[in-house]
Image (tube, rainbow, N blue to C red):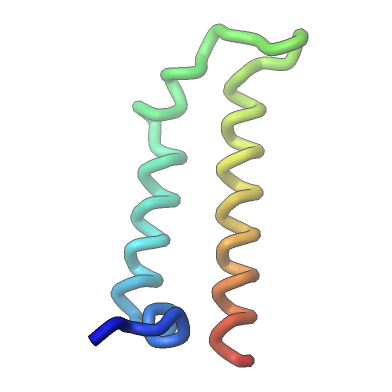
Length: 69
């Protein structure tokens, strides 16, 4: 039986998975991969941190909005 999108968002394990995924993406080994590189004069580490942070915020907003509709 297929699970619906609403059922997935209501599970505490899914929220824990998102937390762990965010923690891993902002962990020290992942951050050191982009150290020392630059794109158009902007350090790549700043672009990486901003992109991950923005993706986490957008996912949390969309998932939280999806639960209450």
